[in-house]
Image (cartoon, rainbow, N blue to C red; front, side):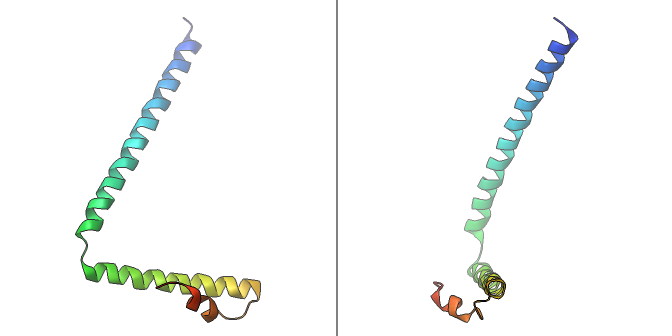
Length: 81
């Protein structure tokens, strides 16, 4: 076996290990996210909804101004609450 062949095997093994840890990290983040989401109070969820509605208003007004469609309130009325 040459040193180049061993180096290629080592690099391939490192890639597999990195991939495995990445998948493990993503899975752990998802599980912890579900646990935290289940424990949030109603107030936290209400605040999140208010923030998300504000973000939608900002994005819709930016898109409307970029497209020259006028103001954003027409789009806001069509969004579900």
